[in-house]
Image (cartoon, rainbow, N blue to C red):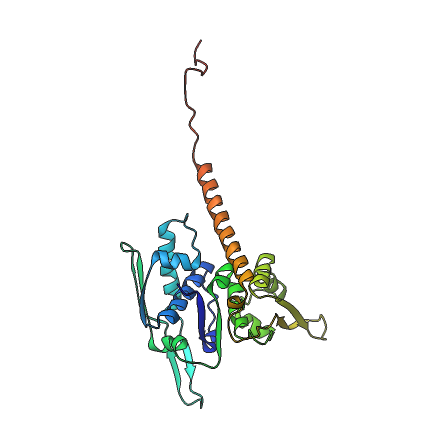
Length: 280
């Protein structure tokens, strides 16, 4: 199945940070298939979705179904805005027009609205594209949202956000101080994953000369892509590394699940003829 995600930059105006990491991956797995199949309605098996998002197979089936349902419940409340070039027409539309899960057949039927479908299947001069594996590799919704926005400017190698835009784009809670916001967004693991998924990725805080040197913005830089296509299609070694890391993550999850199961199991001692008698 195609793992290339491609859509009009207009979609980056909406933040999906309210989704959990698994829900985020599920949404963009569906997005990748909307583009691949060019249809407004498609049916995906549970196994197809699990394969696309590297789902941990040791997890209970109920958890996977819950992820599908929760993703839909959150997305259905999102409204996309579209304004005509002359600013005269303002439209609002939803993502899904229909969403049906069949637990017995283990399938999910997804129908998208006509306006949402156009974000993937019309020709655009300005579009965002990336490999789904890169998105799945990043483990936090903060990291995923930042990755997606940076990919809009993949051929430029530079992006500047004011601190206000930074908070808005990544839906940073108002209760978070600037220091806490940076700790959450750029945790050690997330930063390492971003640097793997986006070669050369770095960030730098921009401060004011006012008292206390408050942070007023943030500069992002990375190795600009030389062509208007996804980096992974031109770099097999990086692609293999990301996929290996994903496999390692899955193996670690399965190992952890088995350990927890063994801890809950009470070992039984076999009584045989070599055992000491209870009474003498």
